[in-house]
Amino acid sequence: KVNEGTYETTFWPQISGFVQNALQASLQIERPLHTYSHEELYRSIYWMCWQGFQKRLYSDLTSVIEKTLEILGNQLENDKQLNTWFTNFQQICVNHAKATEILESVFAYLDKTYIQCILRENLRDVLVDRFQRHITEKSEMRIIYTFNLVLNNPGLLELNAVKDVLKAMYKINADNIYLNPTLFLDLIEDFKIPTNFEDIRARHTTLETKYQLEKLKSEGWEPGQSFQSKRPIAMVNEGDEKQEEESSAKRRQC
Image 1: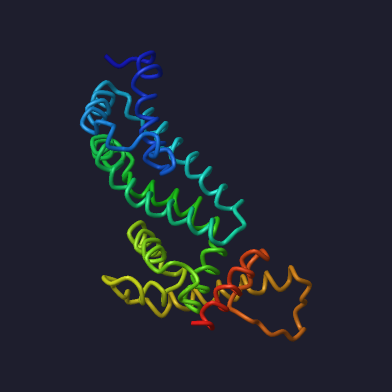
Image 2: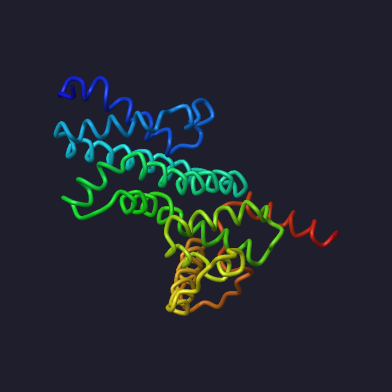
């Protein structure tokens, strides 16, 4: 039976642990997702809903999703090296695309009977919204910068890793193509060109210009002064510049 006591001591700790594990690929090294019984989790969620704990379960679920993605977003923001940042970003994107499907399946009963029926929302939208807020939007400048580097320097990062990121971001939210429409178009095989593709290109160009100006101003440039930009967006640390120069040198030697 589910009551306040058993919810807090038995049911929710089990569910919470699974959700955190699903959203953080690093935790899956110690405990892979296949070690959880998805059927047992589904039955527990069904039983909690049937016992009248839908509202609390939804509140606790969205809270742990929010906090977990906030932690991941902060970790990304604090990583200043291009290669390690991109590796972590790749892991987060690919894992979130997978986690979204898994959580939709495990929480299907809560989703259909409460989130969709009562709240007129759905769990997928919650997972996408929090990803956009804490990962995409928080790292927007760096994502645009990195995608531009890849487009202009194809050998800078491992191609399959770049494709994995693009596919995952496209799967999570097709609107993410604004981060670099040309790169998505070039590297995603089943890419469907939206009717407003040119508007998306324009949005990307506007953001690119915005971040370029912000970077220039941080370096002391003032409106009215002339300047020459070496690349679409200059990034924030010397380590990235050194990596780019080394990659360019290697390509010239080939």
